[in-house]
Length: 414
Image (cartoon, rainbow, N blue to C red; front, side):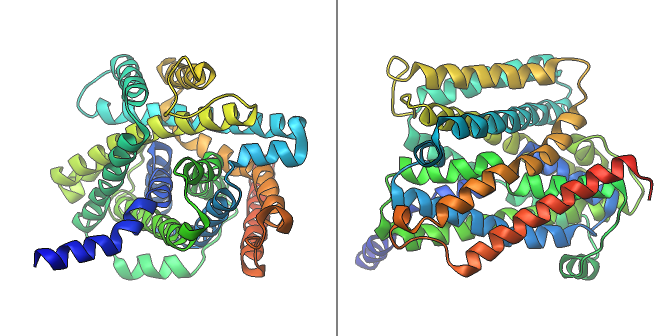
């Protein structure tokens, strides 16, 4: 028995050494902004937006695979490749786009922490600064491998949303019908929610994160097949969890006409219909996702921006070796926290609207991703095929159409 166990362990050891980037990158898409967006989608429109989730699952899997393939084939992050191929000006432009998008996302993570802890009566003026200090110490005092293990464990915690959905006793027939049959509305609120669902599923920071992650993990071309499976698995798992969040809120809040202001409201509002246990699970899931994202997004942003301009970056360097990396990380935590603590900024606006902004800011990043991943000289046999290019182009086109439709809806009454 022991010999058989050792044999099986030897067989799966290469897989265990490679997996991580796809699962973690996919899981953190279900951060505070994501959970809030899916909660609002379910509470306001029932299961009618599940078809968007279904389509974005394939887009997420393909775009994440492109990033992982670029990183493995070149040994460089996306920001470094943009600087080398397109120059400092375009790099600066993309870094500004990324910084704007990520500041909104980081603020959304702290808004999620504040919202989750408000359920148990803790003020945001205490929870947000405390969380920022804990995250800074966790990241700066830990190693990359230790953080990876923590993040993988955090990824498994999303199972609470599956349980919450089952406790809500939804209409599964309607849910699966809406998953495959599109329902479209020109209503302004519907369009904004549609864009937010896209923007919280496929994120600007996620495109840089997956590529930098495989480079930092020092994966080689021999790992390509395993990492592709890791990416696909992570993408599908994250949207399966998103499916259950929408279903849980549709079955309870939408059915009973309950209006919510954020994901914490969704957790509390679940109680009369799904029980106190479902409320606790939903709230714990929100807190876990918020802490998860509040650590990862600033790390990724710091890594990408310092890499783009040639500074030392990464958690394997000490503060004296990479002061720009750690200084930017601290700055992002402070600004993200301040945006939430300021009394005139409502949490829902930060959590929800930031996801819609993400979708719009994805477009210029996708253009560079498309150009780089089709550079046969750069990738030496690992450039895109027709299927991948089709998915990328359709995703870009859909983002552009949805964004234009929303802006038109602001000024036109349908």
